[in-house]
Figure: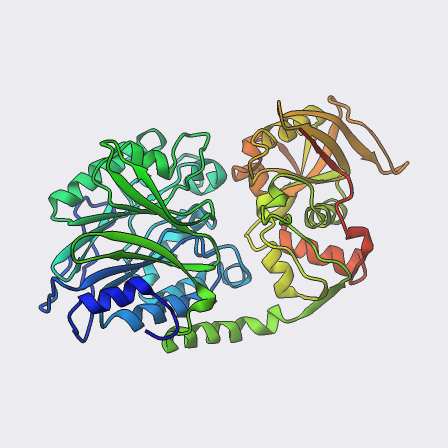
Length: 537
């Protein structure tokens, strides 16, 4: 099996019959929102001794090089096992290739792979739901999501499960997306008149999943696999993948996502005390997940480091290479030089930008404040997606750092509202939180034990000194439109008065700052965080 070292796959090969091809889905696409599951034709060739392998990913976030590997891995083992490839969401956003094409290039690549089923991640909603419908419709892959419904009709937008015949067994894939998307991507769920057009059924997620697991079993599913974009971490809405297992029955495996965790296998007991496997691959195709279902029904999950997979799909790689060629002219353009690394991670690999000040957060917030001419700037740490190495930096590098479809804007708010934002986004410490504020023209202290925010001071541009914030004074604050109208900053800024509405994409604001204000050179002033945020226990 090449140099991949898959012990369990070799075991499957020894147990399985030497058939020439795997069973492939011949499912037909049902209409949106119908309760009926997709029907799949049964292969004429069956072998009870052949194992089932489900290859899975989650939170790829435009890590496109992994797609040829997951497809190559599928092709390499399809002679010895029934194979399917699935995704647990967050694929169209999070990197340069996605940002340049608004997800189109990613869909082109996934279409070349030929996924058997996918669910939605919260970032599939970033360009609004109507655009998501258009993109995913091009992929020609069954989409499953039990909790996305039309508000007026309460009908599901996508199928509640996808049934795939694999030899003489049926595997049902049930999709579910985190209802926190209603807050983090709030703008996507409303029509042009501001009315909520879609919902994620926050209080009913577990019961809806249970209903459709039961339907899938009644429809003949031998195994039920949940494609989950919930994450194992506790949330404000009390919906997570472990809670899903603990409150349901009939699920065999949860292929999870959303929290970017690397989990080869965790066992969680369901409502009846039966063990259920849960797993996550990390992010950006660091690993390919492999669920193995043996002929006797025993299951294992494991993560295969992508760097260890030598086999690639030639056709998928050709698509990737073509897309790289299309984007090369723009992404390779030299923008600036940096003497220092700009970091978002700490030495332990945690997302420091979501729990404390970082030098990457400093330069981004400075760019927003100075380019816009605002009094101060605040931006959510989760919008800064990667750090940058020292040396020559290209357009593609800076877009990779700020890859989303966010636009710079300026709002006018009182000092009391600024403090309210800081308190709200600091309440999750010491846990990572994407809304944690990186700032410019502002300093503050947050105490982890009680999440209090004190010593808030604002830069006086005339004296270049920091002064205590005036809770009644109106300040012009630069941020991204997502933090005002899209659910960012916990909706604290929702309804704020715009001084400048969304007018410049946020990566372009950074590019303008480093080229015009820094004259194409990032120096030692950004070598380390500048002391704007003090976190004490």
